[in-house]
Length: 474
Image (cartoon, rainbow, N blue to C red; front, side, top):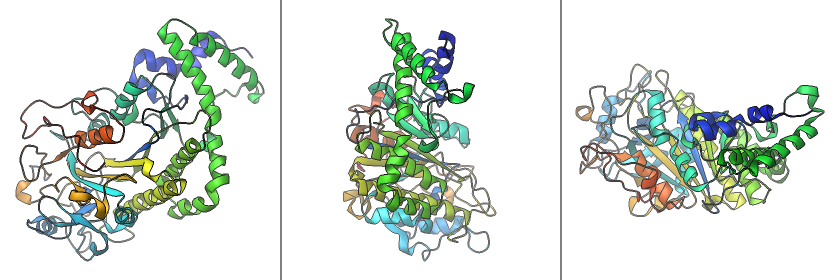
């Protein structure tokens, strides 16, 4: 069966539209080639906690230290039925360090026992009080700000802008375990693989003739791509290069499933299956790709990944330390999934080559409602990896970076949320762009992250006017 020029353009619509019409069209999940080398022999993984994770019951003050953090926590989080209070006893086994500002002992939620294991190994850094000026309590708007890393709304994701600066149109440096390209990775300059499961992935041939003519379609598709690749017009050449890469990549990635299963599945599948949650399954797909890279599978060189875990919009029935509580279950899934994934990477010999950042679009209100928490502002961020300066070996920072937000009732805004501050305030916030900039500079090798991250104007006490891309966790 012949493929016409019009059909060719239609079937490579994501490639063409991404060039002609911009980043929004790159949500199309059509596959392209994976080829990445500017990051070197490293990997970067983004884990997004969708819904606004309650940061105060994620990184929690267990004592006052030289301040009043624990007293303020006890005043805001109730005990008894429906209460969200994590008692010092609940937190006794998950202490991770002290708040740099007040000296208060802080601890992870008891459900995060998997992250506590990574902390004890020195592989987890905790970055407190992360946010941005004039914060929004809208899921969509705040999510977009975290993804673009610009409250003013720059186009494209912060990772996408990095990729655009380092990769061409025929390359695919990234994989998203999703049905469309996620916000952090959106770019019009290069291409992203989006998939659910490698085992079910492949080139999107149509169902005409039951696939009996797929070989002819493949030949025609390649001929059109090769002809376009030789065109002097840049847009046409881009379509041809990307279309060619589309086919090669779609034929290479599905085999990563059986490669991993044959070589590693006996040992590692039971550990991912024991977690038994979607995040563990998604991270296993990432592990399969990483293993394919280590084994030199042709056309498989992705170095950037994103996975998502939902359910954090806990307006009610959030729970405290109860093992059947909603928040406990979410944290157990997160910690256990990341722990298994890290151990899998360590067994592959790539743990020191992996960096993972975990974020959510905002935290939750400091005072609880009846049995949950409403939308809040600043939140903790986790950074995980073999090269991370975390845990007990975290140097002068002790593995904890940034200040715990001021949660005293008198310091909250009119909606009961912590206030973003810069300047010399003892509770100075950590701007999300400083976190990203530190990763760009010290992990992704970007000499000047200011090419990707734009500083604010305005009052330096309340806006991000003095970037710090050396937070120290890498």
